[in-house]
Image 1 (tube, each protein chain N blue to C red):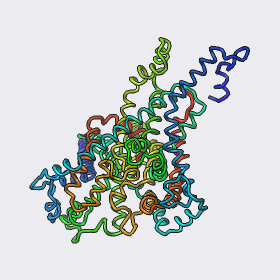
Image 2 (cartoon, each protein chain N blue to C red):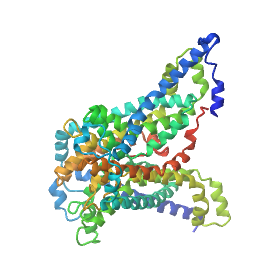
Image 3 (tube, rainbow over the protein chains, first blue to last red):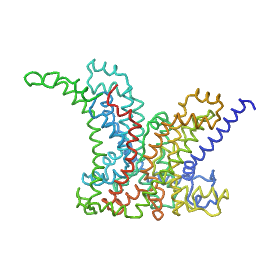
Image 4 (cartoon, chains in turn blue, purple):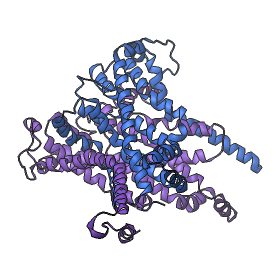
Length: 278
Length: 322
């Protein structure tokens, strides 16, 4: 066998293996999407798994849209709020830490690294009591402040690392031209940091959208409910209605899927610098 | 740069006659502006991390009850929360289970993730497409993943049982989320599924950086594929493997959402981890002191990784702007 044929064979084998691995990895998502178009009697009546169901129904989506629309809106508000708060806190801090010498820089960076490690459930336990006193339970601001804890440390560290690589002369020139520190930050530093800002914004959004721990502990469901919490309540109440539950799950995973298609580059960048979940 | 050098660069604070010279005043203003940029972050870290962690520690030594929720402090309880919580067999097995769960998760995530990374590293059609699609599990809300796996592993309508029955691998559907042993395995599978993309992508980017000349030289020296992997590739990418394991540890010891979505810690507490049991104590039994005590244990375990994590990120501690 020649070297070329051997290499070609190896490539084919690799393609097939990778495709098989990918199919196993993505089967759960496929099954969820298929189930969301099936009736409950179809799901429970089947004696074996049908990869292509004979009948598709939109009734699950109709029910979910009429009953769960407000939860999707709540999730959007929380996710956008988390994104805004994360950027508002992280951007100026990253700029200051990248541009100036503080005696506390190492201490602050070290605390941010430790903050990334802290389990959210340990934060939620005592934050609940603090919120109770401050009347922040069951409120959007309260939940957004808690949810930003996923992305603020990561955001500062990533943005600062990126800003350290920016050419200093450009910022210095803007300052010499009479721009205030704030204007130099807004007009020069931010536009040059665009890609890092997008990465941090995306992860903050996804963290706010996907948060469950703080929604579970800080909300009692009487004011508003993000999608994660409403799915949880839903399977508790109607644990046998899987078609509708999976239609709701599709809504919950939509942003992640869409962002992956639209902004894969930034997401891969965020992954490689170590965004820690939960 | 040392603190002394920093200090010497500052202009003198007071001018002749004790009044502030314009230069000194400007320096003070500059410092105020710099701190204004930093203040929101410092405030946020104090409010969202430092205070909750400190307060958690205080709570763990207090005798709390639903009645004490309205007060910030409760009677001092000494070590009773710790002795009561850690004396409970459910908490003890949750601690042991958290360790076994973490180790097994990391082993399988690494093996599968590294296998996928090696596959991605070969050139073949659809490779880029496969690499991007594989990221999806990592980005889903963790609770949703838990619920999805609960559906997949259902007794009757679950796809896994239907596929197994269809392939005649089993004759009876398996009660994956109904029997204690299987429930643990199911949660483990879900958690491995979540972590594999992360391992695969990071290890893949490390493999990309292994110098081709090094592998060529080994090949010319007569090293087989396995030898090249063990003797050349693995040593070269070792720093990344370390990072991946530390990060993997950090996010596995605090697993919560997946368990709650899948089993809620059941059946019969067989999938109870430290985080879920601490939640139960605080938010189901309203015993915040006991929950805080167990959370302190969880914090200590998570913080074991802190020195390593900081050391791996030592670049980011650099005080000097370029």
